[in-house]
Length: 380
Image (spheres, rainbow, N blue to C red):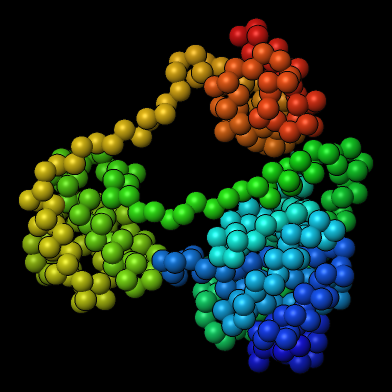
C-alpha cells in the first residue's frame, strides 16, 4: 500500500491509500474485521461545495488514511453497510451526513463514542478531552480548522488525522464495560441506530433567508432591501469562487453596508472587515447591489413561525420538557439524552393516550419512560 511523502517511513503502521489497488486491498482487510474505527475530514470552512477530503480507518495495529480526492471510494459502501462489522465513530452524525451526501452510503452497526459518553453521564465527551483523560494524548486544536482539501497534506495534519481514529477502539472497550455495568446496552443500541437514519438536506439558496441574519429586522425597510441584494450578491460570488459565503462577506459586514450604504469604492474601504480582494474584484458589484436595494420595494417580512404550534400543544410541550429535565437531572445526564426537544414536540402535537400510540420513542425509551410520560400528559 502507498505511503504519503509526509508520513515518516519509520511509522509503518500508518498507510496512505490513494490508488484503486490499494483501496481494494484495504476493503478486503476491513471486510474481515469485526470492529473498525472511522472518521472523516471535510473542507466546509474553505469551499462553497463542501466535500469529504479524507477518510480515516483504524484496526488493531494499523491506521489507514484514504484520499477520496485521488481515488473513487464507492467500494467502501460494502464496509459501511455490512451489519457484521461494527463501525466506531466519534460524533458520527456529521460524518454520516457528509458520506451520504457525497457517496450515497448507508450505514449499519454503529458505536458512537460521543453518544456513549453522554449516555454514561460523563462530564466531558469531546474527543480531545476523552483522549487526554484516558490515554494522555493531546490533539492539536489548530487542525480543527485545517484546509483538508490541500495536497499534499502536512505531516502534522496526517498525525492529527490518524489520532482521530487510533484510540477509538480502546475507548469503545472502556465505555462498553461501563454500559454493561449500568445495563445501558439497549438504550445505547437504539441511540446508535437512530443516528444511522439521519439524512442530508440538499443545499438550496433562499433569498429570503437574509431575514435570519442577526439585526436584519432592526433595520429600516429600505435598508432591509439593500441587505437582501447584498445577501444575494454574496451567494453568487461565493458560488463562483467556491468559497463559504461567510468568507466572502460576514453577516456583520452585510449589516454595516446596509446601514451606511456607501456610494463609492473609497467609502467601501471604510467598512471594517471588507476584504481588499473583494474590493478589487467586486467593489463595483457591491455598489450596484446597494443601488439595486435602494431602488427596490422594501421586502415583506417573512413569518418564520408558519408552523407554530397551537397553545394547547405548547402547554403540553412545556410540561413534557420540565418532566424530561427532571428525569435527566436525577440520572445525571443532559436532557436530550433522555428525549430530544424535537421528539417532545412531536409527542405534544400528537397527544398520545396509550403506549401503543407513543410511536415517536424507541422500544427502550417507551418501556422506560412511556408510562410516566403519559401520566404527565393525563394530569396536566
